[in-house]
Image (spheres, rainbow, N blue to C red):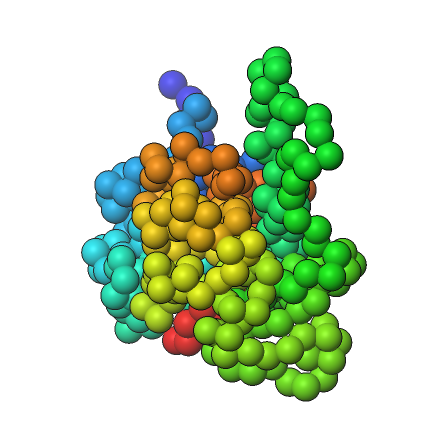
Length: 352
């Protein structure tokens, strides 16, 4: 009987020849949603990346909770809850790369305490502000055009024979040229919207927690106003502020009463900035002219009262829903993880 040949793996050979040799294991990355893979190409090349199984849209919270102990990085989606319980179950976790500019998924309703817990665990949180800027501004401008000229309403009515009158004084909307746009939150998205509005011949007023530099104001020909004065002045009010305890129900019944009866409200920021019941009543009674909403107070859908009104245009949080941006955001969250481990700029939400 011949001798049996014994073979050794490269790992075993390395340990035998070099007892002090340290094998660098690949970092493990858990992705909660089954996204297109091309945006993750570099991440997959460098690290051990786990996606949900083929045919499964996303991992559940409980599934991630069971798996997270083995992972160095978590790539979460905007609606996936990364809370204290999950972070406590993740001893190796060093970074949460969030697929969104907002990070409501790391906040405990209105208390905003779980995001503050991350640095206590040594966990870096990042987001994707740059890719969402231009498409969200596009969405806001689209809602503004549709609401001011009643595009969605007239489109629906034209599909019903005989429901639209063709008369000089029928189907009137409001012109944007010469109108005043009031931007609440003049950050990246607010400024991108301002550029589009200026091109349409609109005037810009804004309200920020902190006033912009004079140079920036001059660039956008923008005038700073206190919040109440902006509501009384603007023909269109666009919400571009983050959701936090200060901005919850920023637009309530009192704020709506300050707005012009010809005013239009646009919200592409976060749903809870607006009291939807108060908005529905203001639209029903003609207290304001119209609204354009891409986000809703209670999740993915509006309250029933809004769906019964013609003077509101609604989309389902589609501000970044373009083919190009989905690829770009996947690459962006990947870069945040790679740069965190290997050095390079990242979009920090917190400091560790």
